[in-house]
Image (cartoon, rainbow, N blue to C red; front, side):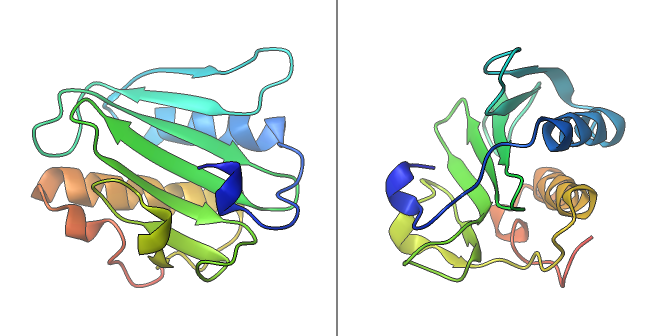
Length: 150
């Protein structure tokens, strides 16, 4: 997500939320190979490395941000350069909670998100569930198609 995608305050990053998200991915997704932060002292982003990806991708990563204001970004990128992301933040291009579909997660293509929950664990469970549904079916169309997950 670029700064141009955001309007208004995103909020300071919440390290406890990033730790909770990390633990949930480790607990729920067997393809997690590794996790880490962009900075151990003052993290602004969690990285979740997966041993496989959607379609022909042989690896993928989610870059996750969560703010103290409850704004977030779960940004997926894989070895075939496919991108998508679930976001919640003030902006001018879509509803506050929105989804940027593959293949390039374009700002112009943002659409309303099917995620309506706001608590960190519930949002994370939703993203994990939709990632897993898309992975198992081989259908990226499953990413933003659930009825108010989790």
